[in-house]
Image (cartoon, rainbow, N blue to C red; front, side):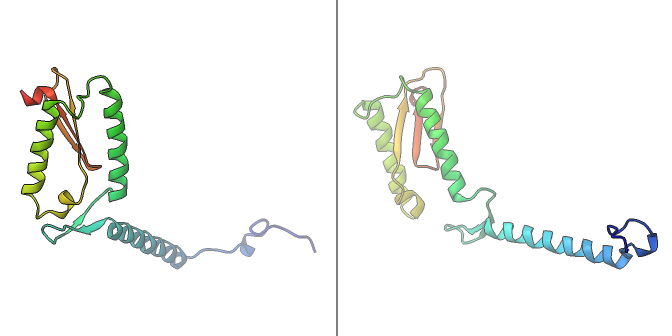
Length: 145
């Protein structure tokens, strides 16, 4: 007796997949794919603490905080020589305004339990303010005028 790999030689000896095997294979694939999508969707939904409604969030809270830390570090590097010190009157004014806004929204626990850092940048060309989820608040000086 000579050993031959399966499927080589006589075609009648080859195992055949019938149409029902193909249908079962594809149905199983659809079920597994559907379960994976459902699991991913459930992992990315959260209940909004303010409205109580269920929301789909593409990025998890951990991802958002990681991205915000990267953006914050990039902003600090790009504004290296233009950051106003903490004791500058303009920084103190912006910090007081930010504290007032946080106190006014005391009903929102995410605002009150977060430690906020206010950075004021002396940049006359750009008028913008940035608030990052990692509790950093950048104000560009042109915005204050």
